[in-house]
Amino acid sequence: MYSVRFDGVTKRDPERDRDALHRFSMTVDAEEFVSIVGPSGCGKTTALRIVAGLDRPTLGVVRLGGVDITRLDTRERHVGLVTQQNQLVKQVSAARNIQFPLEVRPSPGPLGRALPRFHDRPGGLAAKVAEEAAAFGITDLLDRRPSTLSEGQRRLIQLVRAVIASPSTLLLDEPFGYLEDQVRIKLRSEIMRVHRERRLTTIMATANQRDAMVMSDRIGVMVAGELVQYDTPGELFDRPSTAAVAAFFGEPAMNLLPGVVRVDGDGRWIDLPGRSIRMWAPGLDARHGLPITVGVRPDDVELGVPQDDAIVAEVVASEHLGYTTAVRMRTAAGLPIVAARPGVAPRLGTVLDLGWRPDRIHLFDAVTGAAIHHPSA
Image (cartoon, rainbow, N blue to C red):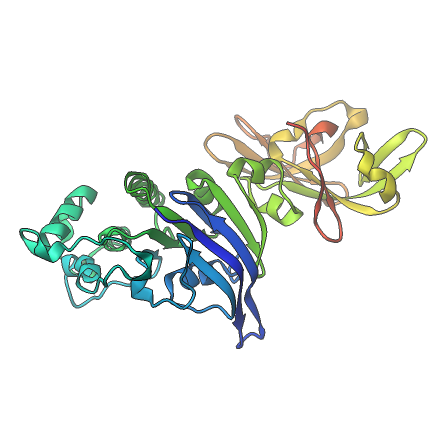
């Protein structure tokens, strides 16, 4: 059981003349499941590769269980890695692919781990492979070569290979990419099972906010190589630190609308195209006349509100999501707004009066994107 800690890690990308990671600091506690999320190129894969020893940081330190592993050889780190790319050796069987980590396993090294030697057990390495295959329900795949397996089966073989040598840490780099929904759900379940049963410290890099929200104890959100928020899934959803974080989490995503702050004798107001909202947030006093971004979760958008307090919008599309329906609308001013509601969506072209309660809106600085105000719990 080992924690993972990044201390001011920077990784320079000379080809793009920028930092792939910039002063990245984050601690993953022992036995914790943490996801690093963000758009393509944000640095999440680089962070995993640095833990694995596949990349070396330009600056900063990485610690595993309190031990500085920044310059440690990859084989001495005792980490398991699963990626969306097929990293299996195609010329040999699935069983042989799974067995490779047992063949090259080093001595305990600076981590001081007592590593089991499966060579000395009855049946040797083959017995250990058979044991793990049975635990994952893939015994029938052992004699097959990777080219004859489905994408989901290959990903499962990678998972078994990643954990067979009792790693201290499991690294998952987009493990669900290109998988069908049912296969994705099954693999997700297997990963969570092995994480809990083997008490692993697990870090996953993903662009999929749903996988991150479902699986993680905490989530780190990255933008352009920097960590912009690190919190529990609930806090990220309820109290996003920036408008970009707010837009990333939630399905459908949060509505972000342009407004202007107005403070007068009647109180504090946010003037939107088509509606003014009276607010009680005292932090608006110094922002009179300045632009602001208003965030409203689709679940908080109300349809059929009283006409004198409404924005008029036309239904332009709808998506049935199973548990709810996303109703996509456009206001007379051209602003897109999404409402989430149960049941059947109104017909396309329907004109609706919509609005939301002032105590359910989020406010963000229009220039920096930083959060100014969140609804109370």
